Length: 527
Image (cartoon, rainbow, N blue to C red; front, top):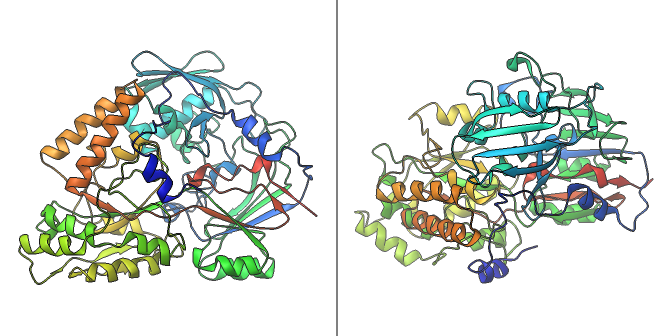
């Protein structure tokens, strides 16, 4: 795992790996899978039953979990595949695509599809399906992939196994968007609105049944495009909220838990569990509305709040990870090579000075921030945040709400920004990360405006078109410096995706991008 000390020491000199304008330059997916089982003798058969306390955030929007947008959790790659995959080092590599390449200004991307890939119903996957899927994902009404909507102007088939994307702006990091968890490849239908609701994909397992708010069952796909894989015969996923995860693991009902509570690692270990943690994972972003008459309109209040939060204490107490990374008040993640740490992590005295300068010498009461417990440790985490804020004279309640319907609740007022709240954000490539604070996103900047915001957006546009790695790195670091000066929102940081498995489950690995893993093709179970 990358420690906080490691990335703080190297962040200024390591060039990012996010942009691959001339095609993939990382270990091929099939080679990666084979490397995980090298020297092993995998056994065929068995059922992997995992419990997951983290449901899909869109769960309450549909009772048809056969669709990847609304699938029970966001572990969609058990049933479906995408054109690309992001590996454990955050490099983008081909998945159902065989290769991808851009024109000179990264406004046109050509993808060559794998031949001999079949859907679960026996139909061959071709450019017809890829084009229809991309059009669905980019559709302003039906689509569920925001990064497609932002970039794609049109998409066309180039023969039976070729797809061409025309973008409405240059984007040297576009192939990361085609790896998103909802950007799955689906059988084409003439009516885009009907696509995806049959549960048919190209993935290693075929969906057999699903009760979307409880569990699903899938069986091995005999005609999967990776020869002789998967090894597991059945895959079953169960939503395991509260104490259900640890209780189910201890009783033997689950032989794996995804996103386990870090505070229960010792209990899992006592029950024979093996913890695998990724370098990072999903994170908590605080949206501070600035389009109404709220204290957050004053940048000094925002800066004071950021300086008051004791992020290292969160890592120590909640994650048992004192060397873990901490947020830098952008959506950049500690494992991004372009990450620019904050110059000062915590300064309570400076926070109090800023509040006094802003007219709050005796402290300040801020509006409540709403959250739903997307991860089991969240209520404890916000307690630590609240206590550290009080040390600087900032009183802020973190109000818990049910996750089902949380997004409509938060967005029901003050449109397009909504209530003060915690947003859950995943680790992504720099351009997607930093676009979350841009004019491409209505909500998460919270109404940020002014010269700094304008400069930030101009730099984002430049970075998306910049082919030179060094120049792009400099742009991204300037953008992070602007955001740290103006604090449009606050990133807590510190989380790492984890997977706990029984000792007889092999190669079940956590991934920083939660939805990219585990890769089930290498997983096998002893008798």
